Length: 273
Ligand code: HEC
Ligand code: HEC
Image (cartoon, rainbow, N blue to C red):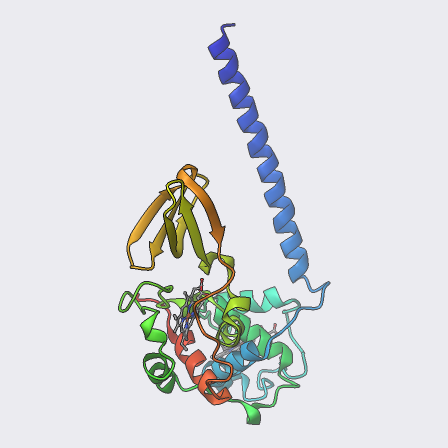
């Protein structure tokens, strides 16, 4: 066998092995997800999600299920009584697919709505709907464009500056709770993907920016002058993800009601269809 052929053969065996290892790892990972959703660990529910779920429930579910969730015979959400649902993922599935042959229709909900619904149904008995703070989307938009100065950094559906992430579909990407935490503590709540990066090239130029995309060899970012920059990692002397954020905390700036308004606005941003 000549050497070239041998190398090729080794490569192909190596690739197959690698694929096999990755498949096993994926399987193990998925398996652990399924177990985690199967309630053998107590799930955690957050107030902002419960509140968002309560709002959705009031507007889209009470017609059939009633305010207390007990109008359908055999189903009583407040008492935790279900016909078929056991785990939280069962609730998500039932709401997404509906129950064929019954009035329970499928709902076209995203992750943030489903998280809200599950959190609310699981906490209906202890949640005080009288204390429900309804966010007002229109007032939230006013705060976004006015007092909050959000629009000086963030674009919405391409309209506005590019130095901070476009929030045009943030309502379908982030849960109510994560948005709430982002407003109170931006640096602490930030997901790694949204963090800024700092790069120093071999000839000493520093580039700060917001990462759009990254692979093993290169990174694409929007720099502070809003230019799209593509950097080859081997040309860099330093490359680091920045743990701080230019976004201020709104903890002391806005009242609880104003935060709820802003969150209602953000949750309504679901991209342009
Ligand atoms: C048009 C009436 C109607 C609306 C609106 C409706 N449901 Fe239902 N839902 C039903 C009926 C009827 C059932 C019982 C189906 C059955 O017999 O299994 C049901 C069952 C369910 C179940 C499964 C309960 C169990 O015992 O396993 C869940 C969860 C649920 N609904 C959630 C919701 C949520 C959340 C909303 C609002 C987003 C909603 N439903 C809106 C009629 C409705
Ligand atoms: C000085 C600029 C600035 C201002 C003002 C600002 N932000 Fe931000 N925001 C950022 C940046 C930059 C990020 C991306 C995270 C980072 O810092 O790396 C961000 C992240 C976010 C995120 C998280 C995005 C994600 O993908 O999870 C949300 C939500 C958000 N901002 C909402 C707001 C709202 C609402 C306001 C106004 C009340 C606001 N921001 C004001 C700069 C700003």
